Amino acid sequence: MIFLAKPISEAMMRLSGSDVRAAALDLLDEVGLDRLTMRGLATALGVQNGATYWHFKSKQALLEAMADAMLAGVADDLSPLAPWDRRVAELAHRLRRALLSRRDGGRLFATSFFPLPNALAYGEALVGALLGAGLPARDAAWTADTVTYYVVGHATEEQLAAGPPASAGLPNSAGLPDGADLPDGGGPADSARLAAALHPTRHPSLIAVGEHLSAPHPAEHFDHGLTLIIAGIAARLPTQPTPPA
Amino acid sequence: MIFLAKPISEAMMRLSGSDVRAAALDLLDEVGLDRLTMRGLATALGVQNGATYWHFKSKQALLEAMADAMLAGVADDLSPLAPWDRRVAELAHRLRRALLSRRDGGRLFATSFFPLPNALAYGEALVGALLGAGLPARDAAWTADTVTYYVVGHATEEQLAAGPPASAGLPNSAGLPDGADLPDGGGPADSARLAAALHPTRHPSLIAVGEHLSAPHPAEHFDHGLTLIIAGIAARLPTQPTPPA
DNA sequence: ACCTGAACACCGTTCAAGT
DNA sequence: ACCTGAACACCGTTCAAGT
Image 1: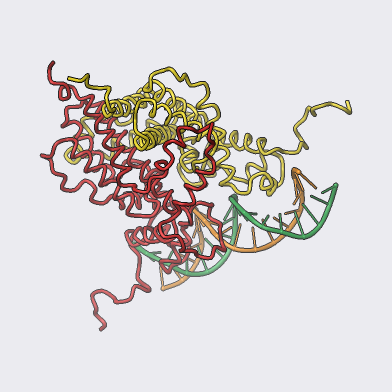
Image 2 (image 1 turned 120 degrees about the horizontal axis):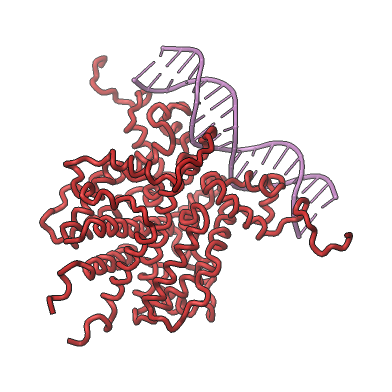
């Protein structure tokens, strides 16, 4: 009993940086980004308030580490012989999946800064695919930005539409009845608010497309825009689209 | 003197909701979104702490009002006879300009919710242009989303790259020497950090496009992606692109 | 109607001191 | 090396009471 290699209980265990990061990601799923607090994290870890600051110098540093951890594996084993457009689509889908894997993951990533390892691996693979398609350096870099803005923007909106019960109002909403009533998030409330704001003569086009303004099938919605962007890339490729004439 | 229609000094004046909103937008320019505080706003207005809560029920409500005020006029006088692609480009440029008109305007808009009047007017004009191009309802609605994600994502990144001295670290950085040393923001520091993180064998593509990763000409960078998206829209139009064969 | 004064329930961060 | 205890300097929000 005395020389157990790993203690069974986690209580009284010393923390590692990745313990802190993992607990922070779990807490994020529980409470959302706006309610994620260093004090709450310390409580979840069973330590005192300042303890986490030995592992991360600031909340911002922890958030960046969380963002990058969320992207683990996004660029792994990407088939290098697949055509460029399939590789781009695959990377976009993987980034989307990574961002959706945690509550408010899109916003978390968006407020982070760039040069962390998994984000770099994603960028490397994406730019590589675009260079492979024949784009010149400048176009490859800038096109990668366009794709990434789209993926992050889409994921952020999707998560905002799905789950603002705990993160919409700022930190305080203290006495909510913990309602897990609605099946799929906050969609219906949002689209009702939107419908109420539409005006028959001022917003004829919005009313004409009405039902499609709040997309109930985010995956289809995502693919629509992604396909659009990839079509735009293809249309500008040096040689490919129009056979010589 | 006694019956002056409008008092000369603003001191002791009662506030209107738009006074509060305007002061909040000015304060945003001064301190950035992360340091924008209800208490600082009250101080700037020369009133006590809780005074602003008579005009806006919460900080979130004020932020939404600010976001929409920032968009004032985005959809005004849009030439209805211009071709669809010019109208889309014009709207995208106008939204960009609106977001850039205030510090952290992109982030402010992104964390806001949708159905406010100026945002609706923008959406109406954009969807109208896309319907006019011949897109079916669903495609028009979803394509408008794609364009808007791009514009907001781009503006957010541009402002993040340009000005994080006051909003990068969370609210506390108390004792900074108020340095207005660097000419154009924080660009060089960021690209140095990025260059340092690049690894010759792990990131060959990123290194190959190196100089283009941090774009010094945001307007060109913006147009690149916008043109790409518009080309993607054109490529999917029901009839236009390929003459019958 | 509009604001003050004062409180309530929080925050992120630092840092001597302990082990 | 890793954490405690306690403090510092803040927050958003509410609300009786004033005018």
